[in-house]
Image (cartoon, rainbow over all chains, first blue to last red; front, side):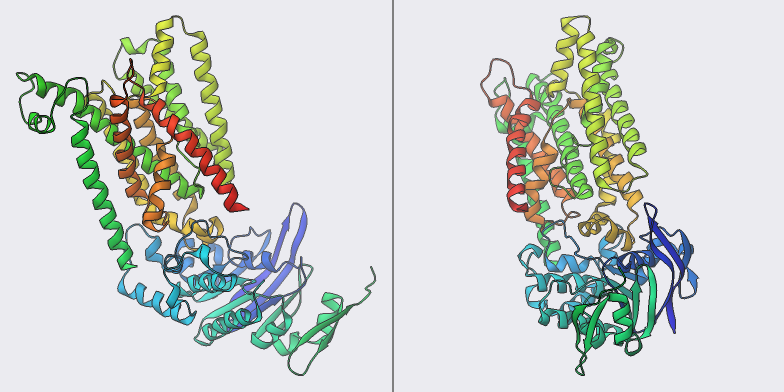
Length: 258
Length: 335
């Protein structure tokens, strides 16, 4: 059942069209991967779904209701966003970073309840950060930092998580651990939409995929239907070898009619 | 997390105790030699019949109170602005509030308004701060970026500085000119409870604006976009912090002249004690500002100069090298 859907989204920046008439659906409880070449509009689509990007045309429906009809502080309980290469401006501890996921930590007129603390503890455990919860963000490795940022998002307990390249620049171990956490998260009834560049990882973890090509949806649907040699080659302009293990290996560039 | 909250309560308590001790000590400092015990007991004696009680109650106590209020306002506004702009170099001076309040005061002196009413200079200073804040807000309102806010602040600051110079340039007599200059240097001497009563309401409203929005500043640790997905109303947050800073700093400048760098130094010193949390920083920074300004005011009274040093001069002398040190340190860390 689709929980979030885009209807004919058009976005352009300085006269250049970035998203052209995009329609897509994200299913509840699924891990959906947003894939496509650089400049296909993945980040813009993610931002449009979060209302961070002004729409020229079209609308975004969340549980059947137009997002523009919803108040932003209400939506913050339902949506969580993990930005690409997220900056953290102060050298706060992991603890405090994760607590940012809790609304009461940001609200001047409420205090953190024992329930809030329980959720923070649980999320720290899920992301394996329990033992280093008092460490400052600035002392962490890239992998630990990525897990801490993800923990903040999970602590919000939002119905949908939208993450922009959460595994970029991580080693295989950390890529797998981040995606495993997100997979488990979606299995527990939450909806997850992530931008991914690694097609093998996408094939391994995503239930559904949306393949973007120059601002348009090229194909979308169950991963097995999207991740085919023909789809990938026409979108990326690269010859792919699809191994039996699920590996998607780019081999050489195809000379397109350029 | 609970431990951290306890730690920060203890830290606040420690600052309050230090402020009380330092404040009591500051009552003993001045031309007339008054011992510690005597200065405290004279607080409860009748100033009409007792000379020492008069000195302590009418001269030293108001000076101490003005120092505490102005220091607290500068420290708190500095911490809040640094949180809003996510920049440890931000200061009430940066967004142009101090310069505009100074301009207001200079205009009042220029037109000889001081002879009409003692409220003229502080009143004009506050109006100056409010006009500049309104302008700042009007100019930076549509744009969501912090960069615009800083640049508009710098622009307003230079404009206020230029108009201040113009007023000095055109002033009719050397006395007016020296009045302006001395006032701009900033001082806590010869203050009375009249000034306290005038500035306090504005400061209290400003403090409420800042304190009630402290928690939302935490969300900005992750940048403006992420903060807005966390349900923080950036428009309102920015308005409240800018308004709160204008009220507190404007009222402070109104009674003490321009005293710089307190808002820069204090949050920097407090930050490691509160785990760099921008929300937990606000209240201790106010106490730290009060503490530092009281200390500086004791300093200007103890330094053996022919004329008493102006406190704004002392804070600038200490503050500007500190600012440069911060810039160099930050550049090294950025690399």
